[in-house]
Length: 333
Ligand SMILES: [Zn+2]
Ligand SMILES: [Zn+2]
Image (cartoon, rainbow, N blue to C red):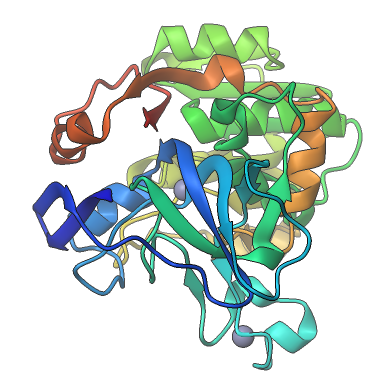
């Protein structure tokens, strides 16, 4: 079969590789759509703990092509998507419902071969059947949505909270709809792109602010916000975000920062203003709720997919430069 293989950092090609025959408890999926994520770019650049060579791709949809001998829940041709998480199930964290912190954490397309290929094999327990009304593009978008659901669960937003979100990219756009639905009274979104802010406003932000105008535009918010979220992962932005923490505010780090990044923290305010600081890592049994959210039309993902490219075009996409106005880019097989 044809697959995109990252041989080693900065070296990738589309080539013939062996077909992934499913094990007894696995299914092999014929892939339709694959979302490209920041993690895939990190894998290409050698900034992720992946073994090489590896086939990336952890956001995907397709149809069941072959089932392992123990698998009874799926039929050939069924339309599906899958949670890429591979939790060991027996470490301290797995046994206490914190599988995303698993000591032996793995994920399809991150630590084992993924979906940037004609076929991918997946444990059958990770697979979810999708309705006919859900496109393969939307289905391949459930995985990032599952990360948003985990983040929202961590945040435990209260009805009426005033929220500021930094970053209106693909993840930011999903957060916007989720924050609106969770009952925020105000949602201010900050980004470099007016187009992305316009989209944010259309889908749930109450105010969009261009980064360059932040000082003047937020003059009326001297009491700060109840919730501050970073979805950029940029240390300079995070430093700025902390200036908007109100009393008893909660901060959520959603964006992935460079590994060695640090930012200064006003520890007196942390103490005196009763701050809460949270992180959120990937998916923790949140794939199914994300799927239900999308299936029932509570969240729209279609408008966040900005283009589809081929497997071959993906090599140049990984190398960059990329268009900063792109939201989610998917590969169509
Ligand atoms: Zn991803
Ligand atoms: Zn574990």
